Image (tube, rainbow, N blue to C red):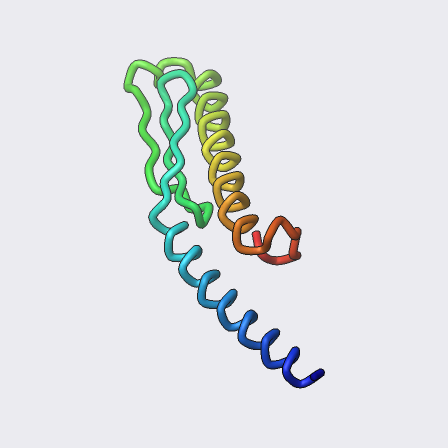
Length: 101
């Protein structure tokens, strides 16, 4: 009986590994966008900055521009992390597994 349970656990682990691979592929294509002032940041589900747009009228005030870039990127990163966590939660059944995002 113990070996049967072990076999089922191994099967479940392989299935979970496959699903994890699918989720990681999805995250490459998931885009999270946030704006602040005239700045727009786009980050994918792997936390990579994919695009940054700055309205030319925003370049006159350097301090405000820096603040807006930081804010837009920060918001997009938070949305990307939350999106990745939601996908992972579905895979892990709500368990918080270290290293899974």
